Image 1: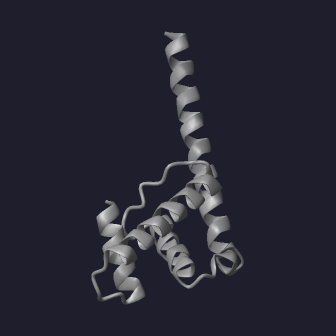
Image 2 (image 1 turned 45 degrees about the vertical axis):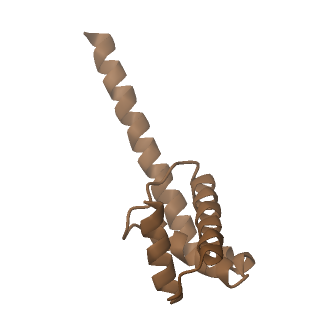
Amino acid sequence: MGEQILVALKDNLQITWEDETTNRTLMRYITASKTFLNGLCETEFSFVEGSVEYELLLERCRYAWNNATDEFEPNFQRDLKRLILRTAVSKRKVGEEIEQTEGASDVE
C-alpha cells in the first residue's frame, strides 16, 4: 500500500526522477500525513485510492513538499471538518450496532 501511495504522490507532484533520497523524504511525508489524519479523527484509515482521506493525504504531502504544512489546515478546513464529522457519525453507528447486538444477546 505504501508503494502505491508513493507512486501516486510522485505522479501528483510530477516527480519523474528516481532518487532514494527523494523517495525517503516522500515516505516521511506520507507517514506524517497518515499520522496527522488518523490523529485528527482518532481512527485508523485504510487510505484506499479515491477515498476522501486518500486525497487529503496526497494534498497534505504536496503541502509538505512545498514547505507549507502550516497552510494545509486553513486551506482544507471544510474538507477536514467533513472528514471528522463523517468519521464521528460512522463510529456512532458502529457503537449503536454493538449496543443493539449486546442487548439482543442479553434478552436470549
